Length: 461
Image (cartoon, rainbow, N blue to C red; front, top):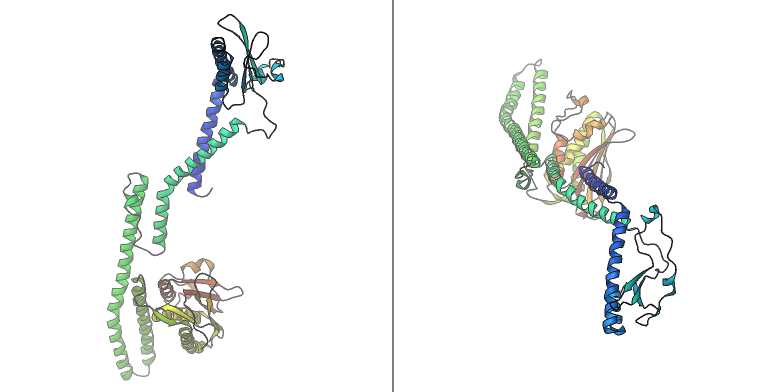
């Protein structure tokens, strides 16, 4: 009972069923069962008497054959049978009278048992005087039913019917009341997944109740959020473009200064050059991420040999890793074809591999593997990168793919990261319809796995 739908559904059911039971109790208190039983029996006896009087008149006026037709019309297809007898005990229509119809009636029940007797006794006997003054006897005989499983109690049938109808009614009422919340939930999920254009829509915002007000507030919030995010991206993009020209001129000035500088100034100029290169990389990453976030789908897709791309990236990363005495090796590699952008896929895999090399301890190994999974409806190419570093705190892992986010120990910039590599990789993978996830490896190390839809294997090469 965690969902609002279940709570509303059960509350409606309890209210309706409780009200029905309370009504039964009140009706039973105001009109006891014996009142209904006695009234019903009196009406049944009065009706039987009227039928008997009419039958006697027909017999005296038209004879036994007319009485037989009248009795047949009264009996119909029911189990009860009517017998008209004269004062000597002869049946007027010639039919035999059942022997159990003449059994003595049972003693009158006490008050408590009378309340439980709803059906009539097996037979009823009435004395009727005819128009001619003769006395007749009308016997209504109801044979006992054959032995079988006792039928369910009428109250249980009514209760089961009430429960079924109440549950159906409550289901649709709860569904109707929670439908606006489901619409808001879907819009919120789209917004949280990065679709800043997600809106509830006029079907809900046009309502005049609290749901409509909440929907209008949600759409207003989404519009403001979209405006702020677009302003932020535009600011980063514009600032990055504006910084490139001064940095280019700064690089030229540094080269000229290094030619004319004394030996004592060279370390300072090299430090300036190193920071300038770092700033250039940051600007390049910001521009790349801004360009990728503007894309909703790939502009031009081509067939990419993912195994060749991974092999090329590993070779470049191994050369850079040798400076810290690390190695980058390919543990397993399957020939896989992917439909997409070679530049974006290279950017995604390269950022993940370089991130692993950057955080790998000196003298350790970075493992890269490429596989093909065909267990689902479509093949999936899987690129996994594992380092032997200290890993990442579990609470930090969900935020690793956010722009400019870095784990606290890396904020001293000794690693050289700026917190954009994994964000670029995430966006590139999403554009290819894939997923990327990170996890700590039991026993030490950190692992990032990229999964993208594949076209299958290429065969042996």
